[in-house]
Amino acid sequence: EVQLVESGGGLVQPGGSLRLSCSASIFTFSPYYMSWVRQAPGRGLEWVATINQDGREKYYVDSVRGRFTISRDNGKNSLDLQMNFLRAEDSAVYYCARGTNMGACPFDSWGQGTLVTVSS
Amino acid sequence: EIVMTQSPATLSVSPGERATLSCRASQSVRRNLAWYQRKPGQAPRLLIYGSSTRATGVPARFSGSGSGTEFTLTISSLQSEDIAVYSCQQYTDWPLTFGGGTKVEIK
Image (cartoon, rainbow over all chains, first blue to last red; front, top):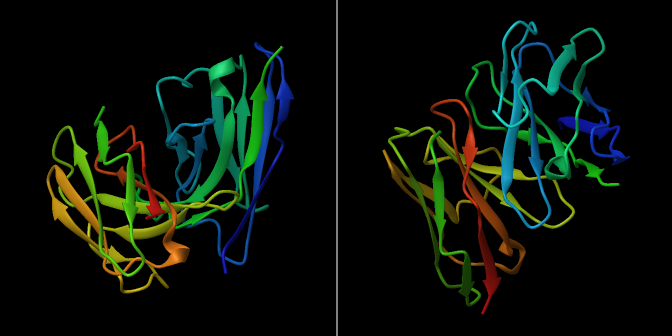
């Protein structure tokens, strides 16, 4: 069974930074597009960012472009999300999700999520 | 951006009865539509992709239909373990977008 385990969440002040990580196991990581999806309290799911297999293609939702950076290390089976200039509206549970070998795709496996709270 | 709208927001269904959930796209997404099940404290679970293909391990009581802008998720005979929030997602174009969700509860 696919395993995705997120880490790095926590409490941060507005304007601060946080780096989320996702460790993948039980599957071959490199052939898949990988993504971050978030869910704010009381809200629906929101796609945040996607990265292709070799890390050269990156896609972001407008609200985080220029502040967040998605990256991956296929040798370590890991996916990261560097979040800078955080805002209160970035508070959410952040999920790591596996896509397919195509860019725009559904997510067939998800982690349990890591909570990010942006507050003073 | 393609806006996904789900209805109703909450659906109350008796055990064993049929549940019908709707998802509408603001423009055609062809059949690039997925459904997810979300339970508190759990990772979201992919149920349906390609509008009507069940993901691995998904019970046959879950079915999806539709194309273009109108989609439906049907639970043919609601079980207690189906109590959850169901979300649709389009993957025709960036940004990928989700509907707000339909909460299914037991009547």
